[in-house]
Amino acid sequence: MDIDQRSLSHTFNDFFESEKSSGILLILCTAVALLLANSQIGASYLGLWQRHVGGLSLEHWVNDALMAIFFLLIGLELERELYSGELSSLRNALLPIAAAIGGMVAPALIHLALNAGTPTQAGFGIPMATDIAFALAVLAILGNRIPASLKVFVVAFAVMDDLGAIVIIAAFYTAQLSVWYLIGALVVWTLLFTLNRLFRVMSLVPYLLGGVLMWFLMLKSGVHATIAGVALAFAIPFSAKDNDEESPSHKLELFLHKPVAFIILPIFALANTGVVVGSDWMQDVTSTNSAGIAAGLILGKPFGVMLLCFLAVSSGICRLPVALNWRHIFGAGMLGGIGFTMSVFITNLAFVGNAEATNASKLAILLASLTAGAIGFLWLRLLGGPEAADSDMDGALDLKQPRGTSEDA
Image (cartoon, rainbow, N blue to C red; front, side):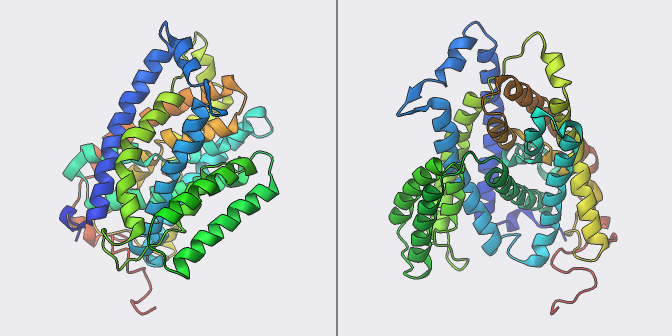
């Protein structure tokens, strides 16, 4: 039996509502940024984000400080999924993990195949990302035409995809490393973790104050400061037995949903998607870098997700959730091709100081994400409806019960 929409947790439904509304607002902000960047006031609009305040440009404040809060929310969502969500059971987590791995590796390989050994090789991480907000916005438009379990699957694999993107940022997009500042950040995190696990301090105040200090030390260390947001999330107390009002992690996650969805991400879009579409835009979108980004998002994502999930199910490691079939998995992979927020974010790290490559990459991301979203919507609109026969299909079985195993295994 499919997961009934009413059976989804209150936290999940709040998350889903915030993400889908955020996706719609992001589209509007992106359109505004594009129009302004290509209008008569384009130079002034782009120059606005380069004005310095407190030692950093407004663009850096957005990308390094505000986005650290966004990454904190991602960390809290991941923590919830690991403790009490779809990723809390290894059996439940294996399929989304397989989908995330396939959806990251295939696009990266496609980009590298076209750009290895060139100055744009650093862009390999750009098509690896998935934008949860836009993906869920598409699912929301589809409404009851798709199984509720597909929404859960997309959230689970997109969260794992975000985790992979965070690892990629930390490993490959780190500037010159200052070891002592990094050690300082690790010491602060250890102290916060100790407050949680050893002393069970439940007030959010010391964690948030320590998080600000950790962000500053991480910024100085050369490791991108947004990583501090994810690290802080795993230092904040969480208990699967607590209700939403009692768990500090739950309270902070619920508090951050709307500010992140309706303030931080729209500001990020306004600051980073003002792409200037010049007379040579066709040359930009047909370059090997842009082709790698577009092919990675539009083709690499769905085929990577499909291939790894098929291998995982065929080998007996896991099974498809009830009421999902391979058409749903392929459609989910298509929606995974909506890179947007994380792809734009990685672009800023991959091509620091290279305005031309940055601008061309963002244009490719916007076009590819729009294409992937449109194709994914049409695919699921036509082929993604829940079918009673799905529960009897080979492979369309409960994810909690892997093939060839028993509940006691």
